[in-house]
Amino acid sequence: MKLEISMVSSLLIVGMIGAAFWLATAIFAKTLQGKELEKSTFRMFAWLQVLTAAGFAFSHGSNDIANAIGPFAAILDILRTGEIGSSAAVPPIAMITFGVALIVGLWFIGREVILTVGHNLTKMHPASGFAAELAAATVVMAASVLGLPVSSTHILIGSVLGVGMVNMDANWKLMRPIGLAWIITLPAAAGMSAVFFLILRSIF
Image 1 (spheres, rainbow, N blue to C red):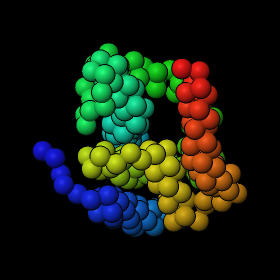
Image 2 (image 1 turned 60 degrees about the horizontal axis):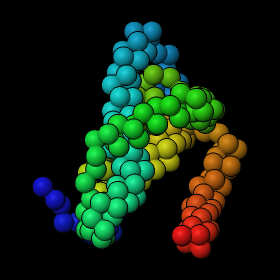
Image 3 (image 1 turned 30 degrees about the vertical axis):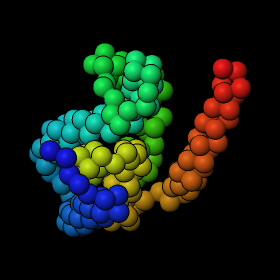
């Protein structure tokens, strides 16, 4: 089934979903604020967080892997058919390769990002982590269903920051370089892509 939804409507829907989960997270965090939680509560949310983490990983793969494999699949289709089509088949081996590459990158160079999001941005415990991951997974999955390429990392940081805002413990000093990176990376990637394309076009 293909949903005929405009880009503006899709953005509004994803925004409303994110706002709804942010509100739910805020209400939930307020109930936890200033209360001494029992170990059994932490243990329960620790197990539940395994499910939300798996859900976020699934939604992450549905969007970020699709973002990465999209241009690659289009190139393969052009090489095979000799023309630019409206759609392109994606070989299963390509999806597996890109998925493995994601895991390898996470394993070798993702630890600093894990530390930043999971510890330095705000103090987290299993209950707040559950709320943040549930919100992020839902928003990314909704974007994937609507066909919107989004940054799952940015969405997760927004979820974690929402918890920190409610608990009055958000590390705004750390958010400054993160926000600057969000602003710089888009034009930087576009500029580098244009330069590489011009170089390759002059060679071939």
